[in-house]
Image (cartoon, rainbow, N blue to C red; front, side, top):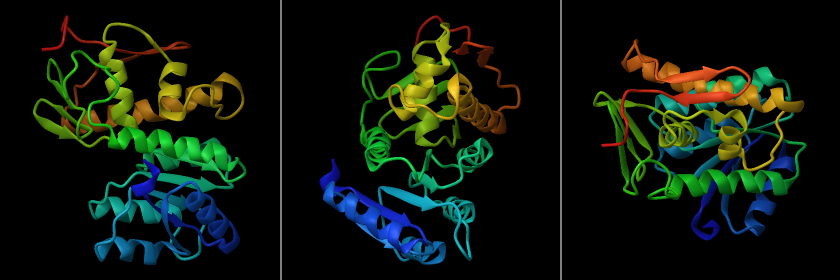
Length: 248
């Protein structure tokens, strides 16, 4: 996977950026670095491509959130992982709500970051998932919902719902277990890898999952303001609820 995978690193800390680029190169990735958001955006507008962007939060000129929002406004849906020294939960929520797929503190080891990168890229490149969902094909249909696993696209009442890869994976997992309660930890492990810890105790990963689910609900309600199919069971997790007994 890594041999043909292109990663863009955007960080104004020259020492950190160069060290990270070297580690990624040693891991087999093709890496390009930028010390500011504007040249990174210009790179893509000029036809440059990448499979993943590692983006610093605090930079002079444009901060990471501004860079991400401009990329999304221009239709660039490349997965973005924020790298930051900011550990407060509010920053993680802001990153995820702006469309990032992950948020990693710079103090964490390269091994942790590499695992997160591999999880995200393996999901982005998968053509048919891991047998999750109802039926083994690339398209899962359940009532008004259609999930296309080959492209990571979701449709509700024939209208596209613009989910990120992470949001799509969470939704697919819930739908594949429709009618059953799914624990916070199951959803969190799906995104971050088994036993990863976010913040202090159980509340850290629960808050992380709530942020994702809130964003998924918001996106569905943008196409249907009566959408109410993701139910919360406080202290346990979530359930996909509808009147369909099985996938079509």
